[in-house]
Image (cartoon, rainbow, N blue to C red; front, side):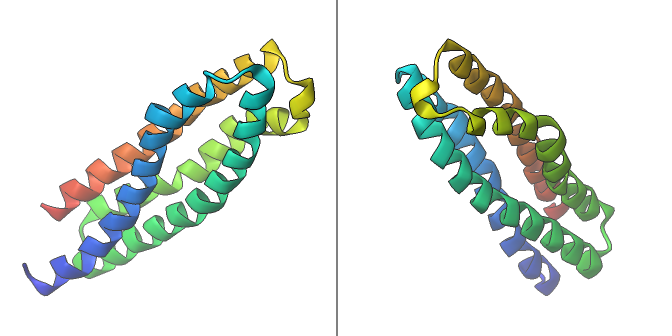
Length: 146
């Protein structure tokens, strides 16, 4: 590998972590969560959401910064495209997912019922969109590598 190629590879690791976490949530956490009763479902979702947000937000920004840095090393526009796609998770989350998050966070777990379950299911569908953005960014970054 040439030296410029070596400098770009660590950024891919961060992007894979972002997408990998979203994929795990879609394949394992959400189906397991939906097996719980309504109260336990919401009681599990609320702290899980807080931890996920605290982890994913900085990683998306870091991946975007690394994508821009890779562009300045290589001057390959695909790095900028990947950076834009991964950073698009922020407005998608704030504009599309956040209203649902706020609704779920406002429900006390002991007051959860079928409506809370439907909202968590709706949240999962929205979250799949966020995972798709992460997957698209990973594919673009991999394309830029080769």
